[in-house]
Structures are given as C-alpha cells and as structure tokens.
Length: 235
Image (cartoon, rainbow, N blue to C red; front, top):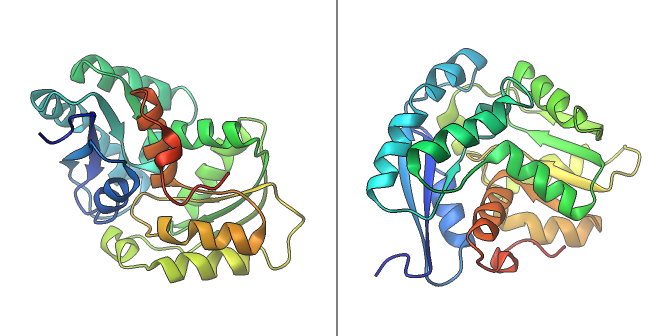
C-alpha cells in the first residue's frame, strides 16, 4: 500500500516540475507524496494571489486521498502577505483537509530556528519584487539577511529549467564577498537544489536550507516520521 507509514499531500503550482520529485526523493521508506495543483504560469505577486484562491479546492481533493499531512508547497505563495497570512493559510487548509498542514514559508522559518540560523544568505530565482518581499519576511522574524541574489525570472517553467549546478554556482557567487552568515537559504520549491545541499555544506561549512528540504522535514516531523531521513541535510 502506498504511504503505509504516512501520506503527504502536496499542494503545488501547476507549472512546478521540481517539488514532487524532490519531496519524493526526500521521504523515507513507507512515505508517499500525492499532489494537487493550483493554476500558475508566472511567478508574480498578482498571479500568486490568484493561485491561492484554489488552495481550498486542492485541500478538498487531498482529503479524498486520506493524506496524513498537507504541505502547501510554494514559498512566495505562502509569504506573500507576510507573517499572519502564512499561519492563516495553514489553518484554513488544515480545516478543509482535516489533517495537519505546513506551508513552505513557515517550514523554512521552523527549519532555520532548529538550526539556529539568524544571519542568512538568500538565493532566489525570483523577480525583484518577490525577492524583496522574502527579505522582509525573514527580517520580520529578527533575522538578518546579510547577502541576497535573485535571478529575476518570471516564468515558472523557466525556473523549473534551472539545474542543481545553477543553484550551486549562484550560492557560491553570493558568498564570495559577504560577512560570515550562519546559514544559507535557497528559495523556491521549483528551483532544483536539494541534490547539491551536501556539497554546498561541505564546501561552505554552513547549513544550507532549501524550500523543498524544509517542507519535507516539517511535514515528516508533523507525522512523527524521523526527519533525519531527509537527504541533503547534515546539520
């Protein structure tokens, strides 16, 4: 039986081609990932707002699959209106899906807290407006974003075409001339980056968090499955 240990329901933008394979790779034996999709082509504030209106429909569908936890797998989509919006999103989906819910933005916050990361280097694929909102979101939790780089990509399929090597090189360039951070965050559930986390951590000597790694970790611990089973997280 699929998900004999736990079933993760994943709410994801329709144009996202990375979250499902990365979360599936990050889950241990007996845990399965089941996705429902919200329509999205471009990663802009207006389009993310419109997309969020379909989250409840997805939650209802995932309830039919008797999932044990739901993950709202979109980073900027869950931080778009700052703190409060993220928790409200979790609560609304949880009530509809009738199971615990995590939203990627809050999952990242919880992961950074667990790692003790306060001075963050941030790498994103986003347009400037969304990168700025993410900086504001992180700093609202008394973190300091000491370096930031965004690729200014709007089309989500173009973000999904980025490779793990792209993520590696973006992070390395970002940290070339920066005061020492105590953690790195590579944002976006559609940015392929999980597979280079261990390499980056070894090269940088810092914990590296990605959107999908944090989401998987948070979902797994929510259903009492050993979160250390998430690959690519040595810290």
